[in-house]
Amino acid sequence: MQPKTTSFRAGIDIGGTFTDFILFDGAESAIRLHKCLTTPDDPSRGLLGGLAELVEAAGIAVADLEEIVHGTTLVTNAVIERKGAPIGMITTTGFRDVLEIGTEQRYDIYDLHLTFPDPLVARAHRLEVPGRLGADGGEITPLDEAAVITAVDRLAEARVEAIAVCLMNAYANPAHERRVRDLIAARHPDISVSISSEVVAEISEYQRFVTACANAYVQPLMDRYLRKVQAALDSLGFTGALRLMHSAGGLVSLDEARAFPIRLLESGPAGGALATAWFGKAAGEENVIAFDMGGTTAKACMIENGMAHIASYLEAGRVRRFKNGSGLPIKSPVVDMIEIGAGGGSIAAIDAVGLLQVGPHSAGAAPGPACYGQGGDKPTVTDASVALGYYDPNFFLGGRMTLDMDAANAALNSIAAPLNLSAVEAAWGIHQVVGENMASAARIHLVEKGKDPRAYAMIGFGGAGPAFAARVARILGVGEVIIPQASGAASAFGFLTAPLSFDLVKSAPTALAADFDTTAITSAQPPSPAPLPRSRLTAAASWPPQVSRTAMSSSPAPPICA
Image (cartoon, rainbow, N blue to C red; front, side, top):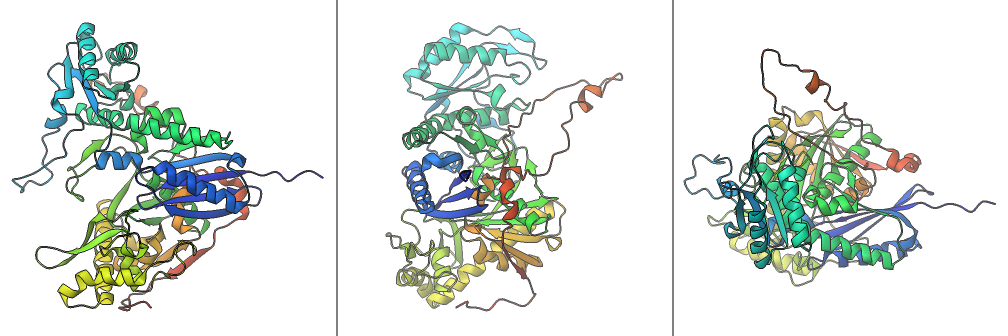
């Protein structure tokens, strides 16, 4: 008798509050879900500890895994919280201030005190070198290699860990940037290098420079993290493939992730979009709205014809959370989504005029919401959900964690008393504010695309998604809400449906003359995108996910859900 073969693959998504795990057993066409609190001081600690718990519960070892697909908020957090490596920049003479000049556009024309995010590279560490290429890629002035060596030595003395090489018109000819990289590697091999012509081979020096600097900013951090995780997995006997999820919904190798970590900026939400498409198809709905609400933020994106929309760039580190143009433009393919509101850990407070507001500050994983019993004392969305009866205090995380109802009520009373409300009324107010804010942002996002939300179903997922999806859908006029199994770890599940991919874009400036030949451009058009691959979960064909479907009515929700 032939022994039964096994095929185990794991998806791991590190979020701001929880780290989610999905174990897929190919032989049994079954999945196992696991969650644990994220460890912000060292995300790898939560990853490895949770993975050990996951495989132990399944009766296997880490060495039995054929593949691990990983997504992380490490890159996002480093850019937003400015916790990346000290970096330098080498650029063409006269262009060191491109990072501050930007495009000279104002995201609010009526605000006389506009602020923009500070450049990732301090001005003292932005050094210029002679050498110039024309817009056609031809050399105008040879690269001054002696000046490059002098600049590199100065940056090394300043103890930078990475250097972004951003030369004018390098998208048309990368020769000068590659030579600078070679000089840096020969003289200071321990310094990481990002050259703009490889990070973004497109016209527009501001976006190209910013993205290259952001890539350099997180390179050392991501390299150390990946080496640590890889070494730990090797010590556990893991010999399978370790891959990373990128922001456009595909997988990359460790080497690509180390070279281009900025492409992992939105890896978790991209997995959620893939999962939404997968669940939507299984439920017979190929046009859906993905509603992903986790512990830190809530996001929405559209799935049409079974595919997520892909945008060519995104903004990171906005100084005005919902103001387009107030952040750092990162030129990298990304699933087109919008942050529409708060997460479960978002803190509620009373503003200067006495109104209730929720976010943008979050309790995170440490100390977390008050009900976690880890020292948090600020009222959060999760505390409100506990007080309203949406979560069972005795069966949180599958019964592995008990929530403190008294602590939740005590935190809620801190805002309820000044408003002359009970703790439950304050909790209901928090839910109302969050629901209205998210619905309003989602409506604007959809209307700007020329879409009517009433024509779509909504799939709710994420740790807090199912608790709010019906409320948001009712406000938007959405007629059907779908809550799939494993919704709490949908992004990790989506990782296991993703293909290996890497997007490349290159500008090709062409003169529009009378004899302009369009053949070169039309023949270079990419083929029509294929539907999201399901071959990554071929054995799951016998595992159609069970979904909870709710037909929405126009009647108002009751004030309290017990």
